[in-house]
Amino acid sequence: MSEKRTEIEGTGEFRLIQKLTSNFINRQSSTLKGIGDDAAVISISDTHAMVISTDSFLEGVHFNLMYTPFKHLGYKCVVAAISDVIAMNVVPQQIVISVAVSNRFPIEVLEELYEGIHTACDVYTLDLVGGDTNPSVSGMQISITTVGTAKKEQIVYRDTAKENDLIVVTGDLGAPYMGLQILEREKEVFKANPGIQPDLEGNDYLLERQLKPEARKDILRFLEELKVKPTAMIDLSDGLASDLFQICEASGLGCSVYDEKIPIDAKTSMAAIDFNIDPVTAALNGGDDYELLFTIALSDYDKIKGNPHMTVIGHMADAASGKLFIDKNGSVVPLKAQAW
Ligand code: ADP
Ligand code: MG
Image 1 (tube, protein in one colour):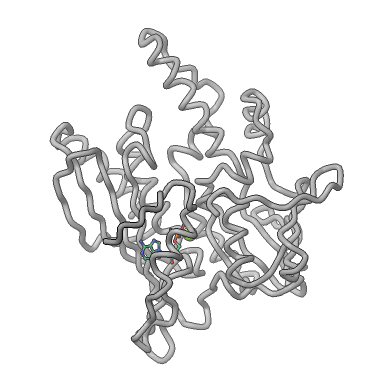
Image 2 (spheres, protein in one colour):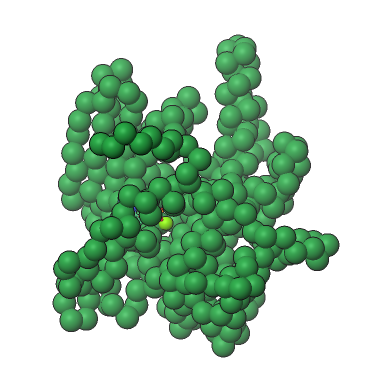
């Protein structure tokens, strides 16, 4: 170890990964895609490749056990993990799970966690094919590796968007973030006065999007039926701004995104206003959406026009134009991404 000390804090996750991995080269000709996409792509035959991705979930960082039922936690971890493989336009097939738990948890808790994992395997037709179990001295940790195989030509990367492509997002954004704000508020109320029951009335949609999200495997089928192959794709885990940044940086392009086009459910907007948060900020930076963000050729626009699952929010541009956000008044500001 060198004497030099650079704090991790403030570096940004993406710069940190780049710093750590920039001097690794791929030595195997079967490695079609290494670090830098939602999943790695490994050739398994002339025509097919395996896609593989791993994700970790840490107590106190990614989940809070004060308000996360274990069943939901198991389900959500699987959803978040398979979402990266789906973002490659590949149907996830197998998962491997490692858990680290301290002995403050009884076995029943792990059984509940595994009930949630089991449900996710049923819903998404996944096989749990292995894992590892260890004691932990500091909180629970769950790591999930997902694999899927597909025809090579079917796989969609982050770095292949083209200038003038349309930017499309699935579902609506910001709801999980507002769900989290509600849970955090009620946690503080409970800590101050344990006698008060949490007030979660009327917030079912937002809470469900936070506690029991779904991965958009259904979109892969819709795209196939519509005969649309996205030119680039990523899943929305860090927030629209940050994940769109990834497509732009990887593809060497800029973009323009229109505030008024961003799909936000009325319940999300109402909760955001309650919390004094701009709904668009929740959609741009909230994260945990697990929707898909992809780009399509302009010539495919007619195929997705009016589709209730997909919204065009802007278009790709040359790198020199920058990454732009056009607000409701028509003012143009640079798009900001926190994870950078
Ligand atoms: P996602 O948010 O889609 O899960 P990440 O932002 O976590 O992706 O990671 C971006 C890329 O960097 C991925 O290709 C991932 O495999 C790779 N990566 C992340 N952390 C590490 C690490 N510690 N060592 C090697 N590669 C990493
Ligand atoms: Mg991802």
